[in-house]
Amino acid sequence: MPNAAVKSCSYCLAFTPELAFHYGNTPYMERQAKPDSEFLAALPRAAQSYEEACRYAPNLAYIGAISVEELSGRPQPWLDNLEPAPVRDGRFGEIMPEDEFLGLMDLCDVFDLIWLTEDFAARVKDRLTARGFWAEPQLARLEKGHALSEIDEEVKNHKALPLYYGGKTAGCCRRGHETDENLSAHVLLENIASKATSVLALMHLFKNAGMKPEELDFVVECSEEAIGDMNQRGGGNLAKAIAEIAGANNASGFDVRAFCAGPAAALIASASMVAAGARENVAAAAGGAVPKLYMNARDHVKKGLPALENCLGSMAVLLTPEDGESPVIRLDSLGKHTVGAGASPQAVTTALAWEPLEKLGLKLTDVDKYAPELHNPEITLPAGAGNVPEANYKMIAALGVMKKQLERADIENFVKERGLPGFAPTQGHIPSGVPYMGHALEAMKKGDLKRVMIIGKGSLFLGRLTNLADGASFLMEKMPAGQGEAAGAVTARDVEEAVLEALGNLAAALSE
Amino acid sequence: MGKLEGKKLLLLGERDGVPSPAMESVFKNSGAEMVFSATECFV
Image (cartoon, rainbow over all chains, first blue to last red; front, side):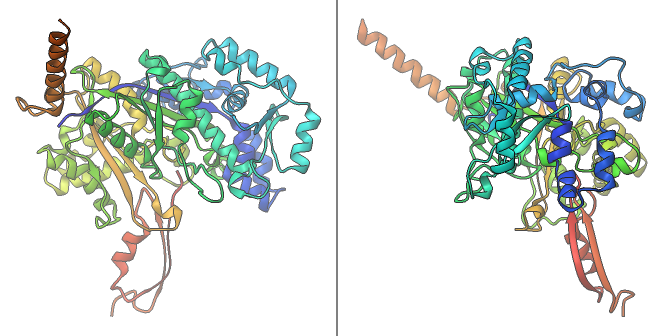
């Protein structure tokens, strides 16, 4: 069976503490219920600065400025041991500051929804231009701005939401319809932010892969936003909207949704299309979630910690046909959590980690690294949600003991050797295994890793339509050329090439 | 009669820990009444 090659990856963060303070769901709901609460009063004092976020080791591991091994070696808590100097750019992407991000939302807006003040619009145009990263047609999309009085009028009388920078109004997000709540300013702000972060990741993917935007064939988008109006809430194709702004004029796309398992599911769908020859190449991309900003900030503030959930995460992975060099996503054995599998941790781990290996005759110890939910534990532990990746590793190891592939005494070593530190922001779908693919790609190219398992899990109960657990997993591995296709067997691609060659010979003979 | 016979249960599950449907299946034949069962997600 043919597979798909993992050609390149990108991972970006957009540092957005003011969006978090005003529109992150926890502070937003608190403001509706108790506008004078102590939590809201204390929250701004718990905010990190941009420089601090750019010195925070998990953020640097996410954008590829340091490796996961380097992160593991850093003294913890990482919060108390910031890197000596701020780093904006990593090998995979960047940490974008909030003023540039508000400008990027305007750049991504095609319905005149984002209005910036004239001063702020001029400032962000200068800042984005100075980066030397954005193409001229993209920069030309930035507006000249509006008078502050116009923005105040939109907010006061037309239900626009103010956008802030430095505590002052920098612009607003307008509604898309007078009565449709699916096109309210609140929903559109979330959707444009997701779109903008995806565009950022896709642009970095082009840079990392050394490809032109017009060379991209297809985008599969896999965030958790619903794009649509009152007649088709969640109608979708955010993918195509992203490709448009990124200049991928020859691409089309569609969206995949599966809560936090979306990225793993999207990569399986993307790899399948590439391996089948249906698409020349596919970029699976996901943007960030505004509602999840400051999600656990109540606990962080209560414990005197910085409110760490201040970054929108985004990522993109480029898949191409197997080339004999690049690691592949194996399609001959995929992890699938079936309807009847059950919701217990044991049942979920069996379906996602054990069964795909068993099908290939592999053991749990044949996988060098497992990448399940890679949530940063410094965010989740103070909130009482535990160390999520570590809990997953312990469960996989315990399953290994049950299946008699491991001794009980080996559990600790298994977790240490085959686990990873959590380094991704708690942005729902973002941490689900995929942030490790960039690091794995580098390690496999160096020959330091052979096989990793990417595991995504989804919380379907949040949608109130089913209580079923969910997840998807796949193996990424360095595979010698030709091993993905049955040795010696004639494939559809072989036949296609033979027919094309014969037709070429015939045409040449006829033209002589 | 089991220890939980006639008791009322509130089941609070966690997505990356033990979700509530898994707990429900454990307590199904305990004789207890499950008055509330929910799973939460903090990530």
